[in-house]
Image 1 (cartoon, rainbow, N blue to C red):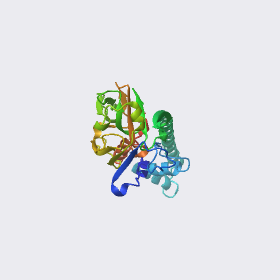
Image 2 (spheres, one colour; image 1 turned 45 degrees about the vertical axis):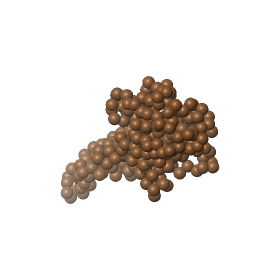
Image 3 (cartoon, helix red, strand yellow; image 1 turned 135 degrees about the vertical axis):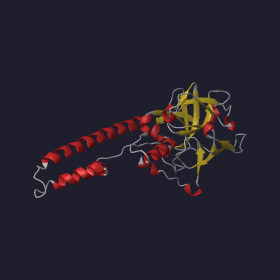
Image 4 (tube, rainbow, N blue to C red; image 1 turned 30 degrees about the horizontal axis):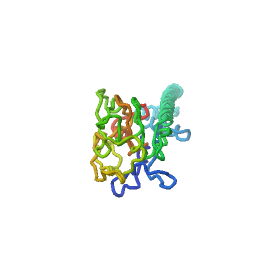
Amino acid sequence: MDKVEECHDKSSRTRKRFVDINYGDRDLYPDIYCNNKISNTKYNFLNFLPKNLWEQFSRFMNKYFLLIAVLQLWPLITPVNPASTWGPLILIFSVSASKEAWDDCSRYKLDKQANERSVWVVKHDNKMQIKAQDIHVGDIVWLHEDDEVPCDLVLLGSSDPQGFCYVETAAIDGEVDLKTRFVPLPCIGLPIDLLHKIKGVIECPLPSKDIRRFDANLRLLPPFVYTDYCPLTIDHTLLQSCSLRNTEWACGVAVYTGVCISISKFYAYLCKFYPVHLSTSSLY
């Protein structure tokens, strides 16, 4: 998950991220944030052998057996045939490397599946299907019942007239009970045609590992009547890997994408304490 460290906002000087909602053509307004492509692979063709050997020799027992094998090459020290040590050592290293290559290939396939699945977004006031990896911060993403959330969203609308929607977060925290999410006050009751044209700005924190907290502000732009700042909390968000349940449709604006999503930051934090490679793509 070291790729998570590549996520740096150009707005980091202010320690805030400003998300322009549905702001139009990206050829005219360059995107300063990363897209939604995820990559959880550890290796490539060039670094597999040196990186894998480095990881294996970082273990004390492997260093010990390598030292014994090297000493057995010196006939003045031991009369034992070096093949009796080098053979099992090479076999163990080969099996371990093969397993790592297989696991990394599986991660690549899962990443590819997640990146290329189709999602509905609003562009130029119209809904269209694109690949999940092509979602950008500020895009309005449209979800239907049982869809998985492709990135971190701030909820803007739902099929419920009171602005509720229900999500399953078992892929994140293991809880099977549905959680309620709320449409921000200025957006409650907006018809679908206005949700296609909605404009505004969200001021939110930089991406962090905290998946239970979100302190931000939403301000809609004219011609919407409610143009004051509206506070946002975690109850107004849909995090990646959640699934929409018991709700016909919901839509939200992408605030964190790709390596910047909260779950990626959280798993990167866990990897510092546990010697396993956790993959967000496994959530798909």
